[in-house]
Length: 485
Length: 154
Image (tube, rainbow over all chains, first blue to last red; front, side):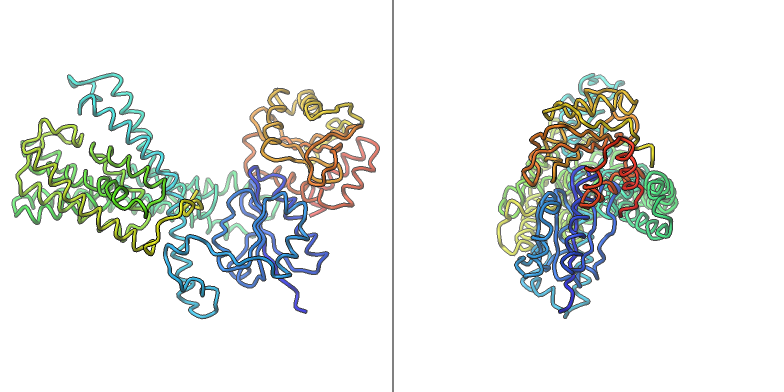
């Protein structure tokens, strides 16, 4: 009889003792039973003895003995036994027997329904090797992105709402030189702003964390800060996160030859020092062109204002919706602000409309198509009503970041409609921020709100329909996204 | 790795008869030898960990451990009690042999963690456990543990 091959992953919350006890127990039991086993440990030092895709593919089955996430999606399509870590220590033979006797049920990762269709179940088959590889690759990118997004969300909501509340005291309430100045509002604005400003670094940090654990997180955070401070926005942050994650993977490969006893030195010294150095080297040249791009766009926008409102609205809407707070959005926004100071109140009206629309698109979509959003997303959607109404475009980012290629065009389209209508109505907005809170001073307030609502609702329908299609018309199960933790 | 364990960190024939008593004994040793800045914090940390899930496994062995700011330097403290104490172990047996792992908060990803995981692995070996049970002096036991964590058992 051919020797059975098993792969296993163990992990516990502290990652000091039980992870390794379970690994050892499984190894000993396997040895006794004449089964080949490889055990990956998710301890505090990170993942050791990691399983390669080939090893997983060749294995007859998978044992997970863990009280923490061990990236089970890798085991899609394999016979799998999933138990707490204590069970791995206590009864390793039983677990191995379940695989050997083929009693384990095949594992289907729920996220596979997102991207695929019924053919997913055939994935384990040998055929379609290329597409399979490809899809797995896309899937892991998506996983990394989601890890970043789910950690970023609380910062956006917490910071954004506090900033919005500060605007209730007046749009200039945080400016000590202005008559509206209010100490409490300034505090809200400052604290909220701080939380908000961590959004991009957190996004980058946890994209990288998903790729290469704690060492990656550190490098990703710095990369995100660089992107943010350099004005590269959330798209720059996503890029920084992935680069950071793979920098660590690369370093791990390069440093593989180092003696095992120096592992401690690696994670506490070499990874952070080399990683942060490298991300700085890589990000600096990327940020430079983004900044000059930013300036170029500003000049361009100012020159386009003389042409027809349709074209201007389209450009402004697309820019504001494209990266929501990033360089394109900022270029439009800053141009609007500059023109405001020169007495042009028309341009800003379109920019504001286009900046208010994206969160409202999300918010309306979660209300109109509640079945196709998770509970968490619906809650975040409700918050987007507040964020949108107060001109905080970034509220839409977590949703857009999940599938940017589809959601961004939808948002750009909705924003463009809002901007075009605003320009056609000739609305004038004298305030550079504040959303609907500045309505009393808007000339043509009704037309402005109408423009924004029309653009938002059209975008919301498109987005909702996309979500419906992505879910194969099946309503979300409440636990569907739990793996994103 | 010798500094993780020495004969002073071991208390055989302890009189503790409750979980609290065992933790107290561990914390006292830690405080006395400058391993921890506060005995109370160690007891609290061990308790918290125990609440998550039991650290007892089998044949009377348990590995209460904690990672807190109160730990000044990493160490392994061993307490063996005269009477068995209910520890919700996997095999339902009362525990009497406690290998306590104390780790400083800042110790993320260091070689000490490697040593402690090596000890955890070694404990899954029946022979190692038996030799620990057979040890009659602090020196003997300290040597067994030192061998186990130096990687000899991996």
